[in-house]
Length: 180
Image (cartoon, rainbow, N blue to C red):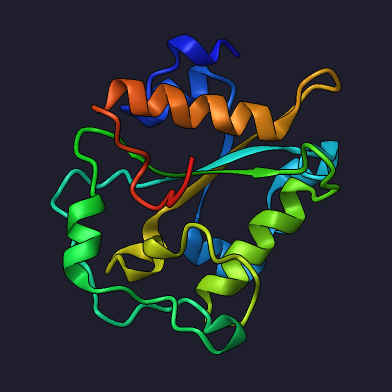
């Protein structure tokens, strides 16, 4: 994957860059991450990068109280005005995340599973990306992923993807990425 030329405008762009899955949140909530046929080739059982994608081109509707879990007693919700200020137009990507990399041994299956459980209201430690759970259509968002090769580092790829995104969108990170 050549991160420097990657485009974030459509699902087709992401597929061309090697991303797979594109499973809706509602399906992941009901059946879990292991429901996909990706389990057969174990691509989710190692490190990689993943994205959360919104394919609806309409203006987003934000809710004051999202479905995210209250981790360590803290509310994941922020004022609607903050969500509106973070929204990035003309892209389908609303979040870029990683599993593994550096000293982490997390797998794509584990990390995406934690994110979905957090969005189902469980008090899970997946504070990053919490803004998506205040989208009215959060259950229709799609998760896609790309397993890293043994010579790649998921943490580095995530950082490069976010930097590439910022270079294409006037310095803005994806909507739900709160740090680089």
